Structure formats: structure tokens, C-alpha cells
Image: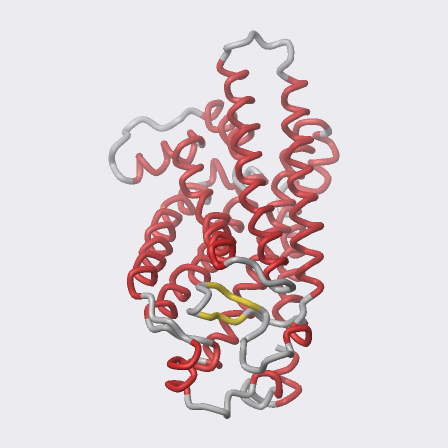
Length: 331
């Protein structure tokens, strides 16, 4: 964004000048039409976003929304919806038409800024969520100091500022249908890859995501300690085991996607690895929808009520148990 302000327009930025060819020529030169992949990606993004909508309505019900974790989850879900719009729906559209950066330079530049900012914002929100759950488990007084009442909204301004930093002051990502993913290098000029480097993104993907995964592991250990005197095979013990494996799976998805995205912007990697990185980025924002439906009793029952498939409302104690335990696996 700072370069748009500096040069007056996207087309005037020297490293993003597409004047050498027409948009159609750029597509024919560097693009590959992938209609089947495009339809699949658009369908995935639309379906998951439609699943998220009733979930948000349940999260924002008074009984749930008074809990700090549900405030964080609601914001995280909204970010996921916008992120899926970029990495699945818009990506699918661009793949379908075989687009490259210079096919739709303004549209892709702005979408790339948004996609990058949303990913980095979601990383900090995920870290805030697991910190919230961990403090609630091991040090409730500290957790209350940071997250009680409207203080949660103050905490959530930090990921917003963090995400906006990437939008305004770092190199955006640009789409290529040839590789089915987004690179920092728009692939306009040969030999200038290093001029598009984004080291803050490198820091985010290596440090922030890794730190969040470590927090998840600490949370699982703390939860296991809390439940060490619980009988083996009990519901609580099974819940603890489920949380551990689900957290490990989600962290693995985000960490592998992060490492792949960092690697492919600095070194040549196989095409299948590039595609895997993008798919994992999509799953990182879409998987919580399926996790909520399968493992969060509060949200599942709330959605069933709204669909008219469940009449009785979950009692307060059950809702609180589900919110304070299952919600920890959200991201």
C-alpha cells in the first residue's frame, strides 16, 4: 500500500509494470487455464464460508459471547471467511481463467495485500486464543486481567494492527496460474526475485507459527496434568487425548504450510510441494469449520437448533464445559 501512495497507482510501481505485453498476451505467455481446479477451489471456499455463517451466529449468542474465548473465536472466524475469499474463491476464479499477475494487476495486487494481511492477522489471533485458554487453565487471575469483559476487544486490536502492517508496509503476494499459488515475485522480470523478498513474512511464518504450536503443546501438557488423577478411559481423559491430537494436527498443517511458503519464495521447489503449500493454507483457514462441527458441542447443538433439528437447548454448565475445553482446538 505504501508503494501505491508513493507512486500514485499500482501500474506506476516499477517492479509491477506490465506494459511489456497486453493482459491477454501475459496470460498466453505465462498462464495455464485450470477450469476443474478453479471450480473445486471456488466450491470449497463458498461451502466453508456458508458453514461459518451459522457458527458465527451461535458464537455471538449472549450465553456464549460473554466468554472471552468465544469473542476471539468469532473474530478468528470472520478473518477466516475473508481469507478463504482470497485463497480459495478468488484463487479459483484466477485459476479457471489461467491468469497471472499482469492479467488483472490491480485486482491481484489488492487481493495479495489482503491475503497476506489476513494470514498474518489470523496467526496472532490463534496465538491469542491458545494464550487465553492456557491462562484460563493455569492462571485464571492473569487471564481475567487481560481478557475479562471488553478487555478481549482491546487485545484483539493487536492482531489487527499486526495484519495492517503487512498490508501497508510489506511486499504483497501475486498469483500465478502456472504454479497454482501466490508468490511475492509477480514473475514479470527475470532475475529480480530477491527484490520482492518479504522478511517480516519470513519472521511471521517461522517464529509466530512455531511459537503458537509450542503454546498448544504447553496447553496440552497442562491439561494432562489437570486430568492426571482422572480415571483412564473417562470422558474427561478422552477429551484431553482428543484435544492433544487435534491441536497437533492443526499445528502441523499451519507449520508445514508456513515453511513451504517461506521456502518456495527463496529456492526452487517441486510443483507438487508448491501446490501442497497452497492447499494447506486453504485448510488452515477452513479446517476449523469442520472441527467446530465435530468436536465443539456448544456450536454443534446451537447450529442444529437454528436449523430446527434440535429442540432442547444445551444447559449452561454443558455450554461452559464445551466452550472452555473443545474451543481450545480452534486453530
